[in-house]
Image (cartoon, rainbow over all chains, first blue to last red):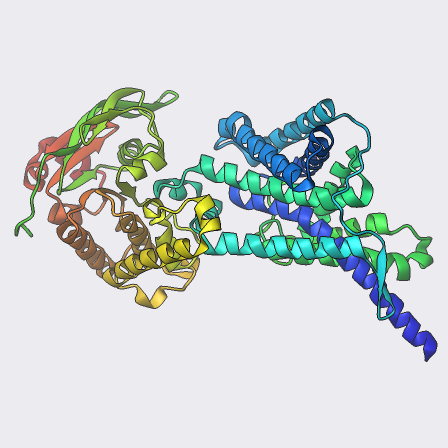
Length: 301
Length: 263
C-alpha cells in the first residue's frame, strides 16, 4: 500500500514536471503558429529569434545596468525593429512567391540573426537572471520546480492575452482575415505590410518570453536556438495553424517524453527523451497528418 | 428602367489609355472609359477580354504599364489595394474570396476595418473604448445583414454556405466599408434564376438607397442590359463599344464579337 502510494506520487511528479516543460515547448511552437497562420510562412528563424531576443535582454541588462523590466521593453523594441526589417527587406520583396522560397528566406534570416547576435552581444554563455525563483518546493509529497511553475503560469497568461487579442480586437480579426485570403483582405483595406509587422512583432514577443524561460533554465547560449527543433514535433501533433493545438501539443510532448523516459526507457536502454517526441510526431504524420487541430493537410514544409 | 430620381453626376473615375501586359500577353490595350457618380456601369465581353484585369487595375492589384487612372480628379500611381479601399473603392471577386473559417458576421465586420478608429495600442490600453466602438460597428453590420436578408446565417462559418449565399455575404462585406465606388466581378455567376433576381434587386437597391456608384462585370447579357446605365464592351483587351444598353445592343462590332457566333 505504502509502495503504491509512493509510486502514484512519483508518477504525478514526473507528469507535472513534463507538463511544465511542455508548456515551454508550447511557447516556442506558438511563435511558429502565429507567423504560419498570418503569412503562410514556416518561420525557420523562430528559434534564432528566441535566442536573439534573450541575448538582447541580457545584453541590455549588462551594458546599461538597468532593471530587467527596462531591458525587457528594450529587447521587445528590438524585436519590433527586427519585424519591420524582415517585412521591409525580406518578405515584402517576396510577395506571391512559392512557400518554399519564403521558407528558404527564413533560413537566411536564421543565419543572419545567429551571426548578428553573436557579433553584437558576444558568443559566451550568458547567465540570464531576472529574479525568477529557483529550486523546488514540496506540494503534498510532490516536488515541483519553481522555475518550471513560473514558466507554465507565464505561458498560460501569454496564451490568454493572445487569445483575447486575436478574437476580440479589430486587428485580430484583420489578422485572421489575412490568414484566410490575402487578396480579399487587401480589398477591404487591410494592409498586409502592417499585419505582417504586427505578427512578427508578436512572434518576437513570444520568442522573448520563451527565451527568458529557457535562458533562465539553461543559460543564454547558441544551443537555445536548437530548442526550436523540439517545436517541430509539437507542431506536427497540434497542427501548424492552431494556437490551442500548439499548447496541447506541447503538453503532450513534454509529459510524454518524461513519462516515456521513466517507464519505457529502462526496457530499451534509456535516453529515449531525446527522440521520443520525434517518434510521436512520425506516428502522427502517418495517421493524422493535419495534426490534432490542424485545419488542413500540411502541404508546406 | 428604374429612372425615378436617381442622379447621375460628374465623372468619378476616369481611365485614360491604359495598357497592361503580362510578359508578351497583352491583357488590356489602350482602353479609355469613365464611370460617373451614381451610375451602374457594366463591363462585358467574352472570356479573356480583360474585364477582371480592368477591375484589378482600378483597385490597385495590377499597375498598368501605360496610361493613367484618376479617381475623384486625382491621378494616382502605383496605388496599393488597401489604399484604394481607404479612398472608397470596394469590390467583390469572381471566385468568392471570403474568409472561410470566419462567421458571416465576422466576415462583414472585416469590411468595417477602415472605419474603426482605435489603434492597436489604444485598444490594448483603453479596452472599454475599443469595445464600445466594436458595438457601434456591430450595429451597422447588423443593418447590412438585415438589408441583404441573411439574418439566419449570421453565425455560420461562410465556408459551409451555398455559393449563392457566399456571394451575398461578399457583397455585404464590401458594403460594410461604405464604398463610394463598388466593383462587382460577376456578381451573378453560377447562380440560379431566383438567386440572380435577388442579386439584381440588391444591386439596384444599393445604388438607389445608398447612392453607391457601381461598376460590374457580367456574363449574363439580359441582366446587364436590364440594370445598367451604360455598358462598355471589351474584346481581346481592346474597347469595341461603349454606350447605353440600346446603343451597345445595336452595335455591329458587338454583335460580331460577342452576341454573334461563338456565344
